[in-house]
Image (tube, rainbow, N blue to C red; front, side, top):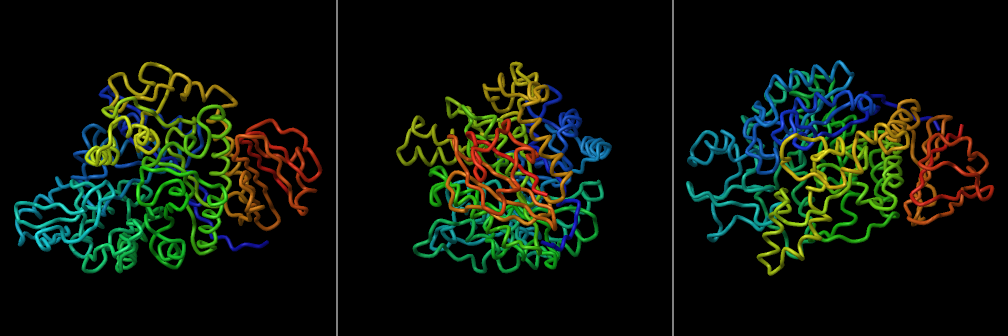
Length: 562
């Protein structure tokens, strides 16, 4: 099938996300830093990645681990200096690695100079940089809730008014209706692009435009407040202006955290003719196992629903937009603990999940440590947790009569600290992350799961990821090919073809802990032979029958069919 291809370097790239605090500590203070990242660039080059997405390194009081920025031009002392940023960009460039950085402009820190001024008086020139509202009947202006529990409004005694904070009370929301604020943001973006960054990952960007008059949740509200807050009436106007004033002037990539964005809305953000962003992260698959009204409660996820999400988003994007492929990041549990089996079949299921990530259509993102199969951590005490979302939920749980013992299993499953434990570089006492005391306890399983062993083991998850990346770079069909799912109702197997002109690849993934047979469609059966396997996480055995594949637990295969 002939396909119109709009080739771009960011479509063909593999992106690796670094959470600086947990990546590598160069000076023994227990906190990862920019020089520590520089030390590991050769490792990332060996893995084969093209782009680093660097989470916030800016000046911050760290109420939300750097997503509360007090100076957009400054670097947090723990992480290094502006000179370290410049050296990181220079050293990455030597290795043909680009760097994109987080753009966090829905909110700032309450310690940012803008907010320090804004809260001084109602007639301060910076007052309108934030969203202020007088009390309504002596209470908060509406019933909005924070993503991190409790009301989204905080009363400020100095002026007797409330300010909006969709995240922590130390993260006041910026008022994008203010022309001067937007200009200051664009100037800051130019500053970093002129330093040499290759683009931005835009934090919660659909939230920057608020609903007019800030209406309360309606009666019978279903609890989906991300969708309620997202895509306000001026969001596309603001993003088009940003593109016109900043983004269009550079050869860069942009990816928005598409919180609350529906499939039918996505091309308004990323379509070729939208002149806004290149990609968004959608979360359709990331909440299949979460209860809508209680994000600490989990339910069994369904492979059929999982397939439907990816198919729906790829169809919605069509040839007009482009997708992002991710299964985990700094805000979610570890992918092998969530979508695989982190005990008996940790290696096999981690490879299976990696196969999915690199063979679907879209740009793949690896979160640090997933390339070695790092798992969730189960701290024995709530005092070991750091994540503000987890700790706020814990306080609320206790206030409602719960106990620490009852809450711990919830934290084990859902805490963002699962993804934030330090990267496990070796089997030494602090996993080779630091010579000091780490800011967050390392996962005890670093003795068995670490980079040093993975790099040397030719059958490791790390070396399988390297093969997947090389495969994607060699075969354009794995980048630009159209996807067709086979046997959608199958509850155990995720199978699909990728087709580009006369080239075709078949991917068969057994998301099951048992041996499973898969019936091949007639039109493919004759083409599928063991010697056509491009990659598999098990040695491939002969087929059980002409039109059947026999797959081991969490087995994945990629066949070349041309």
